Amino acid sequence: MTAVPLTSTPPRPKQGFKLTPSALIWPALLYLIMTTQVPFFLTVWYSFFRWNLQAPTADGSHPFVGFDNYVNLLTDPLNLRVILNTLILTGGTLIITLVLGASLALLLNRPFAGRALLRTILISSFLVMPVVTAVVWKNMLLNPLFGFFSWFVVEFGKIFHLVITPVDYLSAHPLATIIVMVSWEWTPFAMLILLTGLQSLPDDQIEAARLDGANNWQEFRYVVLPHWTQALEVVILLETINVLQVYGEIYASTSGGPGIATTNLPFSVYQRLLQEGNVGVGSAAGVIAVILTNVLAIFMLRLINRNTQVGGH
Image (cartoon, rainbow, N blue to C red):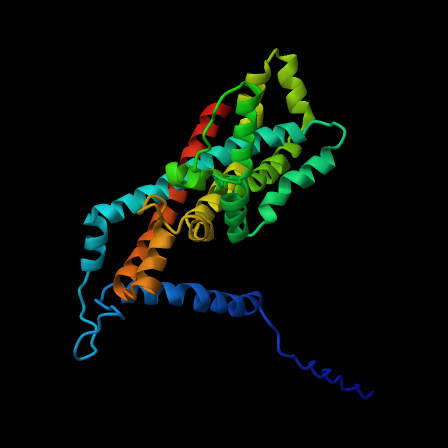
């Protein structure tokens, strides 16, 4: 008999510690929850209590009041004016930035000498800090005594022998001035996103539309606008979220005035929490601001999506 060699099974390699994709995501997800969701739910919790740091109770307790803080905010005419200011500021800024951004994107999509330099100049306003923007507009441009606009109006009147009195825009038209100021900041953002979407449009679609006899308006409505759907959604979503949080421009230029003419929800939260020390009402105002941001963003996205789909058909 021949001996059969015994075959031994090779030892299994030692398996080290392996990280699954979900394990790699969890640290970032936990950090996001701790820095965003936990503070938000604490804000919701505080909004159900009567808690005023400047008028503490005798025993130091914070009575549970349920939805009283929300009811007081939503029934006070002054707070309703603040919500209206927020909606007007957001809507006005969105309209101006979308129109100007789309116009500049269409301009910069055409080849001409100095296009790169002009694009760089147009982007520069988006890089300026909000407080710096407010200070520049308030003191260098809009000041009724030595501002640039006042000087221009006076010199323009001298040419035609007219006496034109400079206007203090921050006092006469405060909310409109803030809208123009914020639009000046955010127009470059809309321009860049829309220009990126426009440059991804295939040339053969434009050529096919022109061969079919489409004029400029039909070319824009049926070819460019449907292609812009995703870019418009990005602009509307991000601008709505950020413009609803405008604070630095108002703080440095008007401080919410005259009266409450330029007070929006973020500035109202600042007044309630830091100036008045009213934690309960300020937290309720913050929750309302978050809800309003989400509702308005969803509404604007659905509106633009429906309009572009109708235009595409």
